[in-house]
Image (cartoon, helix red, strand yellow):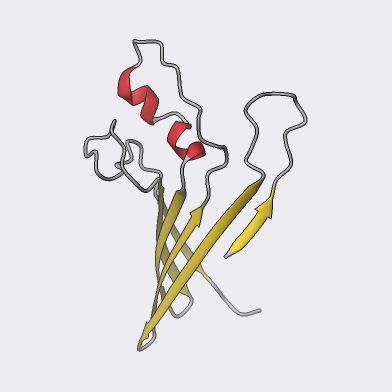
Length: 128
């Protein structure tokens, strides 16, 4: 768990970051023979305070709303990663999302990301 303090932006804009932010991280590692499985989760507090909304043009609909930063910047943000390591090889998949209900989503009781930004990685490590 971490707590960070942010200063205001130098520009005198009304939308400023919240002064205090928290981060929570948890990892679970399991070993089966020479294979290691890793599961991690990270949650970040919202960057900005509540009370702001997005004004649409009336023509852009839910797709424009869901692809905006409205939910990501004003709600808790979570990232989950799953990795497998065998000898020098590591393979992982990571996806971030905004937990909680979203009335504009196809399933309103849980967040459904309209544009997945999954990361797939492969690495090979050698000793020097």
